[in-house]
Amino acid sequence: MQNHPKLTIRRVPWGNPVGRDLRAAQQAELAARRGGTAAGEMAHDAGDPPSSAELAVFLIAYERATGQPLGCGGLRWLDRGTAEVRRVYVLPYARGAGIASSVLLALEAEAHDAGITLVMAEAGSAQPDGKMFYEAAGYRRVPNFGPYQELEDSICYAKPVMAPVRAHAVAG
Image (cartoon, rainbow, N blue to C red; front, side):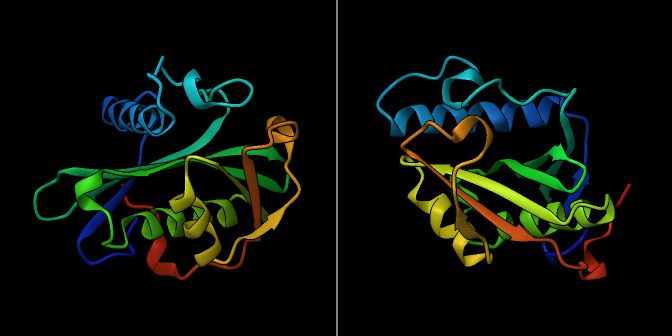
């Protein structure tokens, strides 16, 4: 996938070791924000954590010049027309360069190509940056859905999926 001049965004399996490392870094950061310790991916998930069986798309953003992985994100299908954005994360030193936005645009393009018409997302109270990120990307606050319905510290968002700019096409 290509939508950022300094990135290469690739679709990889959920079990990809680079993706596992990025997700572990995200969970450790979330645990630190909440004042606890990460105990695997379950530490900050409502309901069951994402798995290869239900995550339809997982992307990793690499720095084009060095091949260094910088961030990731995934999509979980909720029903035939709805997907949930999961695990959008960028390494701290690489933030502020548009990497997360590029990953999100690429995820939205993947959703559109799969016939998805609505993308949902969730950000918890320890993620004020996540809330601002989704709002800046055009997501609107909606009632909590699925496993977040009973969680007071969760804030959920939704955005209709539009036809993507073709610069976000999947690369091998």
